[in-house]
Image (tube, rainbow, N blue to C red; front, side, top):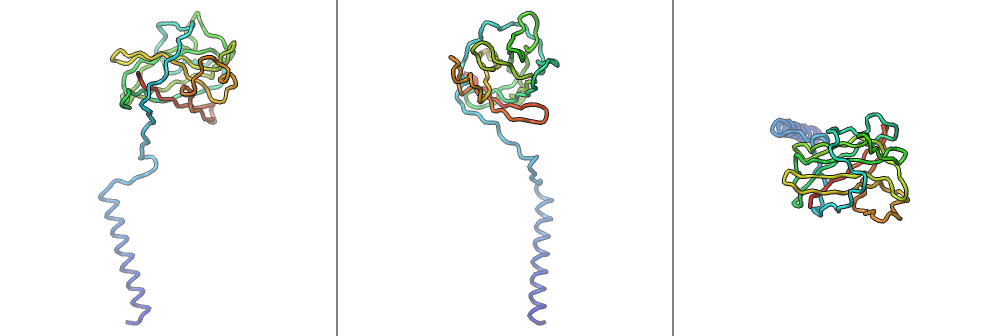
Amino acid sequence: MNTNNKKFLAILITLTILIAAVTFSSKSSPSVTVESVQTKPVCSGIPTPQQTEGPYYKADSPQRNNIAQNLPGEKIIITGFVFDKNCDPVPNVWLDFWHTDSKGVYDNFGYNLRGHQYTDASGRYQLETIIPSAYERRPPHIHVKIKAPNGIILTSQMYFPNESLNKTDSIFNPALTMEVTNTSDGKEAKFNFVLP
């Protein structure tokens, strides 16, 4: 057997071993794809800052994830989790949201742009609404009142990034700024809460 034949045989044997190893590996362990890798939600362990409820809270809002109900305005979907201080997700947490319409007006007679929901088994919530407008000297923001199954209550507000009124608002807290991105259907935002 000449040198070229020996090299060819060595390459053929190496390829056979590699193919067998890949075949065995794919049968013995599940394949990992981008879709199968779940990223863990971010939790700081620092309680979300409390903020005033303000004068426009209205009890007994309807249970719904979509509080915009086809009102005019730029659509936004906000998702996130509710955690305890140990960064464990908390299921069945009551979240009540309310905010102004696209003209800066609260509905104080009905329940437009008001609604409550509960976190799912993984502690996740999803709010579908429109982007609120600024009013008076307040930047656009969304109010939230949260009550955990153990009775812990958190009242706060969520803010939008890069709003000029954030700089002059007397209660604005940068820790309450949502992470907002543009999509083909409007905007998406993420915000995680940590209970006190």
